Each structure stands twice: as structure tokens, then as C-alpha cells.
Length: 576
Image 1 (cartoon, rainbow, N blue to C red):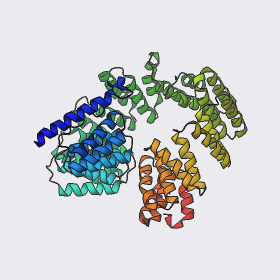
Image 2: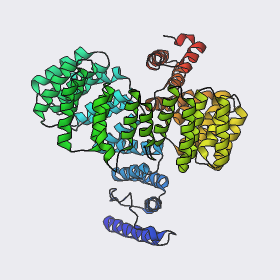
Image 3: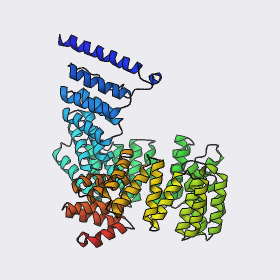
Image 4: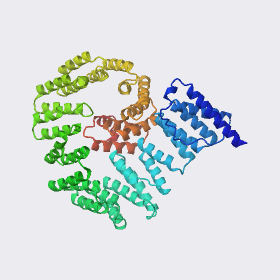
């Protein structure tokens, strides 16, 4: 009887959904791909309340109301203790653009199915995104203990690239290796990850001993030789790097990663011709790929060998689809070799797109560095005339250059002219407001930013700039928080906004709530200002050792650190 009732309920739900979809104002868009299509089916029995909850969730999902759909599925999952509904709630939350909701749904899914692989991987990813590297590693190690690949070496590389705290991660991996059987699946992955962290954390001898032992038992692993080659190069031992890359080629003939490492090793040894032979092999294997030529050219430029880089790039400019970055790099090479006018020609050939403004800025700076300020300004004016659609952005660059040269009056004139010509340009209005702020005109800055927010209610950058300024320089914390929270709703992953949100919470005395936002901000964008905010909050929470450690690392890491200096002046006990 229960099965028949369940079938009837599903038929009723389907008919109701069909009728509702047919009655929607945008029924002609029914063929648009449904992101919930691949979600698991609902297979549990329903009572009246449960049916209502699921109907509302289903209809909300089809209408794109993913936040409402998520909540409905989560309620139903709680009601029926259903793993499938928890998974469906997580899928809906992914499309909601609400990170907190997504994480809540994923956590509930994981709690309901603690041994399932998919939610565990998702929890690892979410922890890493918010900067909680320890939780992310624990989740990956749980996968390993369940016999799944934890991708620990990849995790270690990401931790290195994003400036994570290495010592606790290396310690956790060492404990894992001591507790695990050496023959367990994926043991080599944990060894590689541990070695990467140890080498970067100042213990290269320990890392090398670990890798040497792995080489005796698993010499066939390409990842082993990749890791050994990379560590050797990073430790300034190109001979060992070359040796490891050659062994890697023996295990994986033709692997382009080893050819690239060989080229890097040869360049580090000053063997430019040998490095060129390796790059020729790469090009022979992959044809005349433009992206590959650009990447190889960068390699030679990093090693300060511009001539081979130029030879790699010149064939690209004969192509109708020359990558813009090729012109940019050729311009830099010509500039380095003192060919100013030749470099200018290359920079001017960069078309509209990602590299367009960077090329114009580099060209103008080059002319200024050559004591040709007048030529730089003439160049920018001509570029404004040549590229009408980019004129406002070029004018903004010109203002920035003049400000940097101390020519504030001339910068004011350029900005005023550009504002007259482009009164609806948001970037110019934002620049005008921030220049008023830098000149000490807080009221003028606030007026301009409020105009911009009124014109563009979705401009998270303007909301954050005004909100942060109010939080940092006034006691109008409620206004500041309202602006910053709206900016966070619009751009929840933006590091600057996360920093502002943490800072205003701290200013309002909500120190515990402030901390996770600042930790996420620093994980995404480790700069000295966010470091100062995070250290101050840690200090306020009586986590003094962590605060001092963060300040010490920040002073070593950042060349300029005015906010950290200011913090130490206010709290001398934070000085290393």
C-alpha cells in the first residue's frame, strides 16, 4: 500500500510540476538546460507535508530560485533522513551563488554520509577555498584511508603556491606516514607531498632522504622524478635537477614536463644552446603551437636570455592570429636591449583585449624612464584618438602616470576632460572619488562613491571602498557594515571585501565573527594590510603567539609594510 501511495505522490508531483512550468511567464524557455537534471532521483515515500516541501523545492529549482530550492531539499532531507535529498540540496546550493549556504548543504550531506567519497571531496575543496588548509588535508587523508586517491602532492603544490602555513601540514603528513603501512595504496603520494612541504619549509635534506628511499622502491614513478627535479632546481642545484629530469624521461619518454625541466636545468647551468635543443624537441613534438612558443620564450626571459626568446616569438608575428602577449614580450625584449622606438612599435600592435592596457602602460612608463615624459603624454593622447572605445581607460592610465610623476595639476586636467567626454564612465567617477580621498577630501570621496552606487547598485567595488573607509576612519560602523555586507553578497569570494567585512565586525566588537573572514581574505590575498588586520584580531583573541608569528612572517615577506609598522607602533608587544 505504501509503495502505491508513493507512486501516486510522485505522479501527482510530476503533473503539478508540468502544469506549473506550462503556466510560467517564460514557458518558451523550457528547453534551457536544467542544472538539476543530473541530480539523484527522489525515491522515498512522502506524506502531505513532505510532498508540499518537495514540490516547492522542485518548482523553485526550475525557476532558478536555487536558495529556496536548497532550503526545501535540506528540510526534506532532515524529515526523511535522506542522503539523496542532501545531495540534491547541495547541487541546488552550488547554483545559488551563496557560499555559506553551499557549505552548509555540503556539510549536512557529509554528516549524513560520512564515508561517501563525493561529499568528502567537496568538504576538502571548500575548506581549502576558505583557507583552512588543515581541515582540507584531514579530509584528503580520510579519503586515502578509505582507499581513495587523496591527490596529496597536488594539494602540497597548491599550498605552496598560495602561501599556506607549511609546518603544521608537513607535521600532519609525517604522522600519517608513521601510522600508515608503507604498502598502502597511494603511500607514494603522501611521501611526495611531505617532501615538497619539507623542502619548501627549510628541510631539503630530510626531503631528499625521503625521495631517495622512494626511488629505491618505486623508481618507475614519473611523479617521483618530477618532484626531485623541481626541488633540486628550487634549491639551486641544476645539476641534480637535470639528472632527475633525465631519469624521468626514461620512465616516461617524450613527457613534455621533463623536457621543460631539462631546458630549465640547462639554462640554470648557463648552457643556452643545450636548452634551445630541448625547446626544439618540445616544438617538434607539439607543432608550432603559439602558446607553447610563448611559454618557452618566458622561460628564456626569466633566465635573462632575450635573444633565444625573440627567436621563438618572431615567427608568431607573421600569423594573422598573433597572440597579443607575443607583441608585449617582444616589446619588453626590445626595451631591455635599449631599442625604445622599436619597443614602442610592438606595444602599439597589441590589440584590444586583456593585454591592451598593459601594453600602453608599459610603453608610457618606458618613455618616462627614458626621460621622455612629453613623448609619453603625446603617445597616450594619440592612443585615445586611435582607440575611441578604450579612450576612458587610457585616460585613467594617463592620470595614474601623471600622479606618479608628481604632476597632480596636469592629472586633474586630464581627468576633468575625460569626465566631460565620458560622464557615464564608472571607472573615471571611481578614480575621481579615490583621488579626492588621497588628497584628504573624505566628504568629496563619499559623495562621488555614493553617486556611483546610486547609478550602479551592483558595483561591489564602490560599496566596499566606501564601507571600508567608513569603518576604518569614522565611527559610522552600521553604515559601513551595511555597505560591506551588500558588497559581500555581490562578490562573496573577493579577498578585499572579506577583509573589510572582518574589519568592520572587529570594529563593532564581534571579534570571534571577524576572524574567519580575515583568515579567508589572507588565504586568498596575502598582503600586508590584511596581515595587519588578522594579526590584530588574533591579538585581541589572546592568540598572541600566532599574532606575533604572522607579523614576523609579514615583515619578511613584504618589501613595503606600512600597515604592519603602524600595528607594531600601536601594539609594541607584536614586534618580533
